Length: 532
Image 1 (cartoon, rainbow, N blue to C red):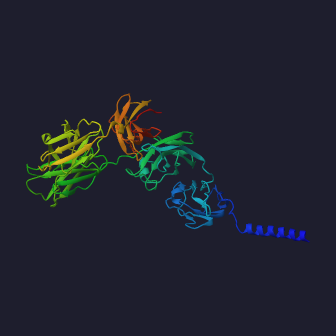
Image 2: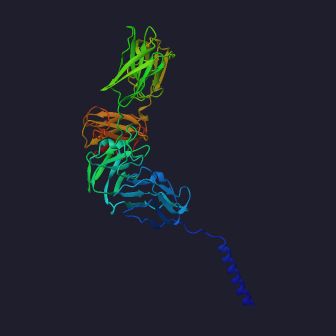
Image 3: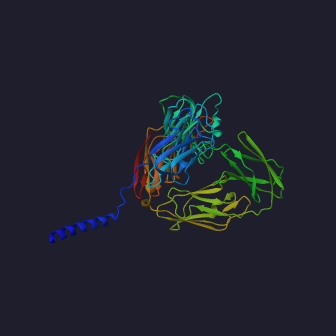
């Protein structure tokens, strides 16, 4: 009897323990499987397509994530289809076609990874729905890579497009209409593939856009292109280099800023812009022109013995001529202000610059004194850049030294004969051990080239023009991470020249050194930059 009671007690204990375990579930394994498509109506790859609505059924609730960024429709539709669900979850994905469809055309709707399950967010990988309004699915494709060479790595997705080259094709179509076919690069590799294309001749274009409307906007978008039309089918692999075109020159309305100061704004290349006064003025009328260093503007300064109600000008830039009349008002003129760059620490190979808010006429060197920390006079030379309205000082700078530049009243005289008050500018240099140096040996390159050191934000920190082979030295670099890029100066003009689409002219080629450069204090770095 005792044995029977003991047996029942053990059994009861096991049952209770089992019940207790059921009351503390572990939650099970996390669902990592993507949703499964159960049915599509019409079926994927349908031909002779006439439906106005597409329905896709899944085995679980799904929702849409980042659809606007990921959905690609090729050919593009003028009116985007309505796609449901929006903001909620459903087992049914509905695509309502609003735009009329082109005849005998294969359409591809690429969803990327925008379709995800509702619980764990598992994406349906790169779903694509394809149909044809004709009796077969076009199956040709174009592949390649599209890179913005101004950047060392892809920064955003690039749209790659095909325009049909027929009797109506003109290059200006990229400014006006959407392409026939479209795809996008992948984030990491910049590779692209346009699929489901019919045989024919096409213009291959790449755009890196702000507003993703597949219409080229000069000055805002980057563009790349194959120089000649391509003929499909083809097995060629295309490499497209994107660039930002310089905007076509266009003058803006002339405005009065203060008394005796007008601003002539413009867009595009203004290096050859000329301003001519055509109003009748007295012999005592004098004028000067300076350029704003931050904006595309020229300043026209004038002085005279009497007031004018208005002034009339003609601006010319190559073949473009514009006439402007400015109604003048009484606006107080600024007083002379001088600022220095840099303001404290100066690099051993850096210029000291004094800038003025009013145009400078004269510099009296005898009223300027430069001494070091031992009060020993330091010889210097200066250059007055009238266009930028700056005075550039050159002097020998020694490591671990202090310098004091003083300017007595009258050292700087502006266009209106006003002079400076007493000025003092203090500068300090670091020791040589506070800097790093970089030597670059170029291989497999043609000269001349422009070589640039840039920071993480791709701002240019140093730039050298190199006309012949030999070691290239960047000295006295502030420690930090740098990147190196090289521009092939094809026309030997010393500056980077971007391309021009309508002239079928590519930009000058840019190459990037594949690794970052960790410049350390007291170190000399030597690298070999081998060009392809």
